[in-house]
Image 1 (cartoon, rainbow, N blue to C red):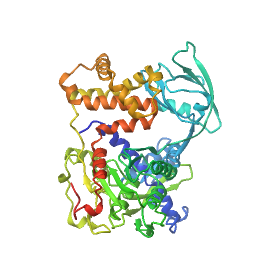
Image 2: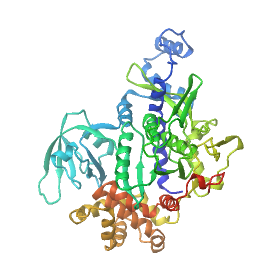
Image 3: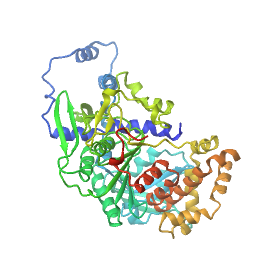
Image 4: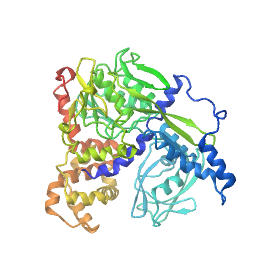
Amino acid sequence: MNKKTLIIIPLLIAVSVAAGIVIGNLLRQNSQPIFSPIGHSKPNKLSTILKLVESGYVDSVNTNDIIEKTIPEILGNLDPHTAYIPARNMQEVQEEMRGNFSGIGVQFSIQEDTVRVIEVISGGPSSKVGILPGDRIVTVDDSLIAGVDVKNVTVLNLLRGEKNTKVNVGIIRKGYNEELEFEITRDDIPLISVDVSYMINEETGFIKVTRFAETTYREFMQGMQKLKQSGAKKLIVDLRQNPGGSLSSVLQIVDEFLEKGEPILYTEGLNQPRKTYNASGRNTWKDVKVYVLIDEFSASASEIFAGAIQDNDRGLVIGRRSFGKGLVQEQIPLMDGSALRLTVARFYTPSGRSIQKSYENGNEEYFHDLYSRFSHMEQLSADSIQFNDSLKYQTKSGRTVYGGGGIMPDIFVPADTSGNSAYFDKIYRKGLIYTFAYTYADNNRETLSRFKKAEEIDAYLNKQNVLDEFVNYAYEKGIQRDAKGLKQSQEIIKTQLKAYIARNIMGEEGFYPLIRQIDNTLERAIEISKENLLVENLVTDSIR
């Protein structure tokens, strides 16, 4: 198993729990309320027990605390995505779905107990006062955050705050002997959901969507306009590791690719009547050939997008089987500022597929499903995935597709494990590629900042001894030299080094064009696009 998955899986699961919130809210707007006012029901056993404890227990008790601890236990007997959100977590949840928060507008990392500015958001509060990439943040108001084993959450809490409030930040900058002080007025900072859009070649554009928030449709359309102006006739939409999110955004985006009346999805539940969403006919990108990338971390709204494109035979889905989250949550606010996120329906792709994977053996097994997939080597072979005939469905043109646990791609691409080695595993676990790339970019920022394209940085770094420098750096950090392991992993190490160095200089437009050199799924999609392979070229069953 690629060790990166050990980090990504818990994060994906946590985010995927939140992914159905806007789907439920939109569903609620289009259906009758299913919840009657609380307060007139007969006392139940739980409320009776609480009253007995409160009035008769030997010691004083905090019943509110008992309730807070009990609610998750009760909901744990339902599906995996019904959840209780404590009041203290509501702001973060709302920011995630809204697509912005209030802060100072920097991306930072903590290395060697130092908060280092990676990127300054253009036009944001920090940009306006002169904060630069490479700056070290040492103080925030009266709090020292350098050399004190500061945690990421602590820095976030200090830098974020109400819009229009002020925060004083102390900066150490290379070339200056004294600490620089800046007063920054916090403002709304967008949470970017479209990482990058750029031309891979003269006719193929690439767009990376990391999640679906309220701002994603606007970001996507801006990216598409950029690609169209550059001559894009083909489009690769990368939804890998995208946990989903806003239904309204994904509906709007899919609508730009389908003819009027073509189905996008429908939702239905015991207490929710069927609601069908069809394309309105905008179909702005009708002449663009579409290739969608998914993997085992693509969930919810990502699966809606891939399913709609696949079932309508609008484009090809490439990669590995998606996560399998097809439940819709409605968020119900409670009186103390907390909320109940209740599963109220399932969503179905145009062919009628429910892509929700089974949770009949309990939520714990459900959340370990991805680990099971990796242990069965699913990421390496499509033949390891077996579907029951009862899960067969037909696309618009009559191709066979399957439901019951994620979207199976039209073209399966196995995970590339050829560059894995014990040496790479050790440097990856310590995050040394990332920290070295930051230090190298910082030490060579003046030279590297002269380049305007990722390819220029790539060409420059190819003439340097970056790999040798890194091996020495890793040795100084306690990783013994390993000639055999380095030989096996040198391509992936060198490419990641260059990509992360470029990211520290140019952001995502520096990173993605370079990391594609070791991205076998993207390279396969590019090959397919060059072959002009489309849905009509496929046989009845999916190509594997």
